[in-house]
Length: 193
Image (cartoon, rainbow, N blue to C red):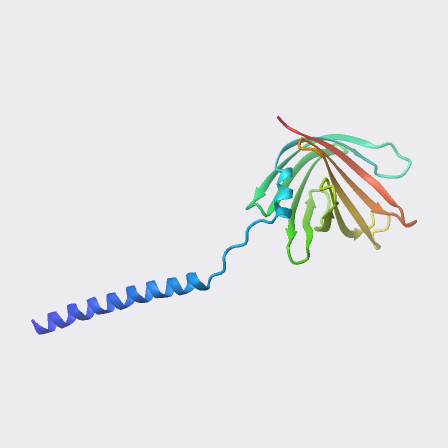
């Protein structure tokens, strides 16, 4: 009988101690745990891109040659209010084309950041950029190999201009050997209603 009483008392005591420790430990972690960050106004600015878009694109493959025209779609989603992820579908020179773009804002660098990958190249493009004072134009800078000189690095610039809440223009330019920017592609997009 004594043995049974001792066993039950020990089990109850251990259970109480474990419960107290679990409560105490979780409250300590809760007190020490920093609050999750919240999206800043810069992150919120990117949310204007969220939605479905239809686009008309004009691309120049070589100077002096006629531009290539195509149509496409873009589906942009928000990722936690911090990022936007865009999936672009089009056809380029009779070949299906797919691109993926991420855009966010780095609060330490105080720069917009992002990436671009597509179905026609093996390069991961990394962006860094700023929004102009009008809050209408996002300019993204990157660096990669020159299409005419594959062994040479050159600067690239992608610009997204918000004309209004339902219209935007995306342009992609490359810095030429003469120090002038050459626009290779311009895409006008309209939000699908």
